[in-house]
Image (cartoon, rainbow, N blue to C red; front, top):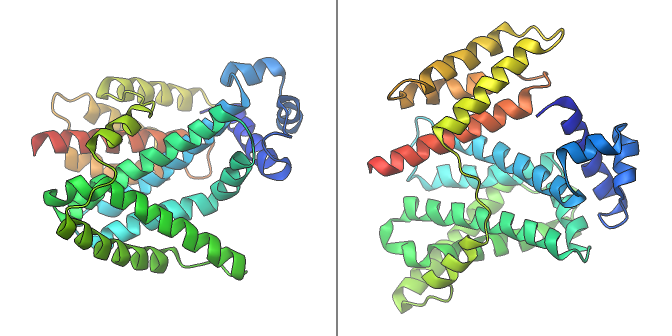
Length: 301
């Protein structure tokens, strides 16, 4: 993502929160970002696409941190899961996503609400899979419903806390408490064999998610373009970042990329671009590589 596109997103985010989504015009965004209408439409077709891009950025950030938490640790450990869930709360706080959600929900834009709904379904699907990792295959029929209940409880606890306190809440403490509640609910559901959100409902919901196909080929192409962009950047001499990028590209081009090599270098790769204009795209690339590694690992099971 280049600097100008990132500036558009930053301006859009500030204005959506400050003025509300409905009251923010594309001209407002153009004035704030200091760009022409043609430049805006070169990146986005509408304000809604700006929101989608902002949410995708936050999701890539959360996904990246969650995968890094897993390195060298047991994915079946409930404490690891608690840390991973809390990461989304931290990211949403850092990027002010909660305020964006409030701006979206106060609008009457059905397409926009659908974008946020897709984001929510994606997150519930992720947690559903992690519940199966932690609690075992036997809970799969109840996992999606328990993920819905988890986020419902967590959201209302956070909102209630914010209504009463100025000080921030502790995401880890709150997440751990809700997890314990869900464990009790899960046991009761399994004892009663009670399922409200069944497989057919889950299938319908997952069909609503517009999934972008990610393959080793697409990531290799993106990383190759990223490296070219680094080399062409004026006055941006980041030899360390360039070396990490080339090393990852070389590994991805192997007939059988080594998982442990990629895992051990992804964090250093994106961290080498801190305080540079390339950080956002480096995180996106790292997140996509983590996704491919997870898919590859799942297929070997």
